[in-house]
Length: 518
Image (cartoon, rainbow, N blue to C red; front, side, top):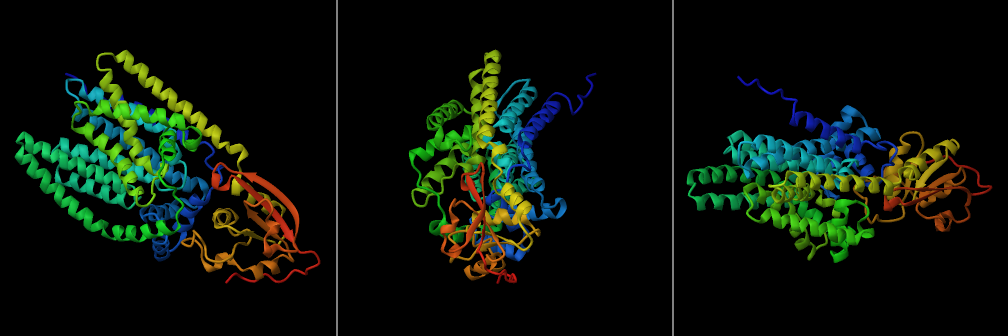
């Protein structure tokens, strides 16, 4: 009699190892990396009361789910940098686990023979390993943003979809899938593209069942699918209204450039080495060629699960390109959901091409992992965290050198929100009220602002200015003020690549009592 196999052997131990590697690649410089504007905006939005949070989201271009969940997370774990980024890292690990489940299910519906379970474990570990070490996914899981939440929901929803089709899903599994889809739609607008890909796959699968004469299975699929689709559509209706309003805001205020070939190749370059998109365009062309060849290999005599992979990888790219002909929305980091299936397609192509040569398969898989690990080294070297202290180091320097009562001021909200986070209640920090904000109104409240007149009064005591201008003294509001100290800092984000800190004061002007901001 065969004894049952322990649960944490084989694939279980392997999966734990993959998760450990994923965690190890997402922990470096966890707190040393200064929060940049987008991350600080996540913190600020989540800190608002729920009514203000919703209003802030309406004025922004993102969906509310991430901020609501982050608010709950902060209530339990606090607001430290480790806590904020730990939320994303957690979902990054869920993504690895979810894509392992998806890849195993994909293998089960696409393979045949007595070794399906063993093969499913091996294939699942390879795909999960690719997601664990891919720098594009690492980058999405180390910042306090919603991308890791989106990738986790994309992986889980895709896994549930394949699972319910193979098992001719019980009703509860259909509703579990529906919950994952609604959550994805409320996590990020690009989740809509992934949901469209899944819906198209389901429709084609239904047509295939009818062509085979499996009418009872087709009727059950149509009935369950229609019920879930109707419910998802109803629950998503407020999100769609939100999307309509935010579309106009993107057209008026956002800075997404037009889609050009340079942007296209740069996206595929970032699939390999994020932040190097425009410095590695020829590499992007090579990556694109490898990916397209993989898609063709998967498409030839593909099985039912293979087409879900293709749809989930290709359709978001096509839809984003189509919409960008009307309003530019193509941003490389938004394709992290589709990127999961780009990696899966490459692995699937390797499996198909090496059915008769396991040695060649091992060589190709090893080469792929080596390339991604090398890309990780390039990625972290490019960030140059030890020499990029950013706003965190700027604020620490000011707090160490400032005298009591000296105010901290920024002329730009891009520096203000991170500075507000790092300053906390240890000093007064304000944003100069210089007229209507081009962007950031969803985060700024009247109490965050200081008028030019108030700033002039504060100069008698001394004011610290954080900004990207190496000569802020040329600003009219600082006319007559003398720069007494100056520091320069760098950061890994281009938005804050060069930061300057100056201490200004007006000679012989007596200090005045600091007034509260309006």
